[in-house]
Image 1 (tube, rainbow, N blue to C red):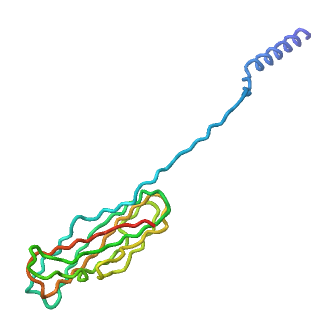
Image 2 (image 1 turned 90 degrees about the vertical axis):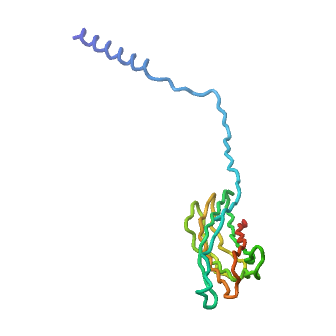
Length: 183
């Protein structure tokens, strides 16, 4: 039995030697260094674009019974690429309606009522609060608050023009200006 015992001991010793030889050695670094990483987010602009034109339906004098009303709407998109937290205000103003060549007196700007609407669509983080209807020749379409990062708002605005019964025939034109001011 001694012979078997020696053989068993040699087998166990050989297995231990093979296991030790195949175990990976743990690498211990001699030195290390760190690198600081930075990323910069640039600031863009605050921009606005509006529908190029609005044509009211033709007013027909035969249907006048006092002032005649005509309704249309126009669209505006505000894009805020400032990547910040400042809100903004969207305002409007309109000129008097005049003809060319001038064959009648101008139709006053206050004959146009501008009614801001809730936002049609928003993207990013922003809260839109529509302004109030106004026929004063200027006003606020609304304000953006709770802004965080880049965002955009698509707006529709209702326009109601009251053409006076005393208006002379002709094509009248006015300029509606929509602007955005950052907070």
